[in-house]
Image (cartoon, rainbow, N blue to C red; front, side):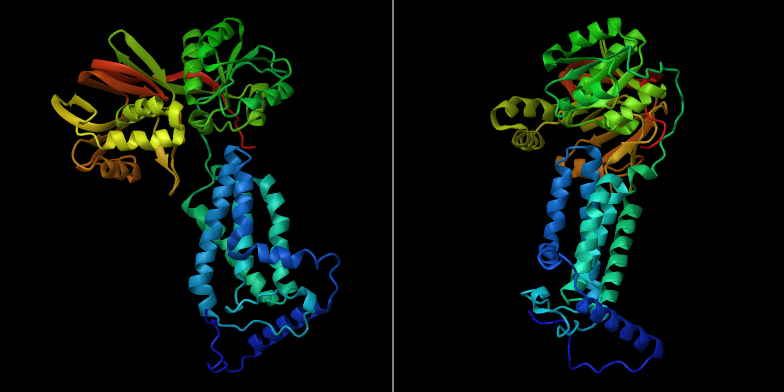
Length: 497
């Protein structure tokens, strides 16, 4: 590797203000080198080395993500994305725009100096940029994790002056660039705190200060079923029933018979069963996310026990739409999505293999088998004409794309089905990818999207699979998808935590 500093280049001419600032920078560097920093010698050089190539921050992101909370995962992803942008900017523009030599190490005690000295240019500090970018990105999603990461990031930045590899101005410029990178990422992908969820239509719901009258049924097989002890602490007079997945519907029916408010802890499939029962019995619903996928709870703004318990205590609730499908005498509801075509086929194939090889390998195998099939999984009549389709997706409410982030719903009572169709043809994988990347209201030879209140499909072949909130059933003949506007009362925090 060759150094970035070409010592054969002529030095720039004199400039009074620049020369004074550089002189001040050198005096500050020498002042820091002469100072004795208690307890810093065994810590800061090691901390500085651990941040090489972002290793420290990738490890920290893994630790934050391991907290298994939606906010923690978002904080980890945003921190890494901010770090990546800051690092790319430093390496492509920063280091080669201002070709400043590294400080002379004479004033720095040998015990502080790094064993391997960097040979790139000094301005700005890449370590400081990465540290500031990661800490700022994390703090934008989670103030608690931000408070944990910030002192470490500050120490990494200071270690660059302490070990003698950067001037103070290098560190300040790098930190400023890192903060700017985090804000640039936020401009592309807004944080959840930036999105104001509509509080309408407000609904009358019981205020339960201690949780009395709330019966929560928790799916013990859900990924976060361990949240039930925290729920008991937050709402000590609430009744919590834990049961296996096969007993969920029976226990929900029993709970609904004695509850003022029906509660559920589980993933989207579990929430679907609770929503159908609460809708039929006219009960308010309290949703605590507890599964791998918690789209409905996330769109409500309910992320944990604290946000749900606050809403239940205050009686904060809204009315939301519910989707319904009807096929002859068969019908069901969905709070998230309903789909026909590739996705139900994937679910069936995945379930066939998951108990043998695990969920993720089964999902990959299912995708390969379904997408390589010679037949289209769905053929229906649209507008009186038979059409082969790879996928028909209907969302309960409009799904918006937040910058480059996955789509989510900002309004759960808009009266619309967000219908997206992937037309039949060659290259199903490319067609599905194009549809996924497209905006919510687009049309092309490969896919189309429209918002309607009701959709009727005819000519559906016998044995066609329909998936609703992850559950799968068979339909045939005529299938109707429709909205039930503002049909369900759900607890939802009115202010961000």
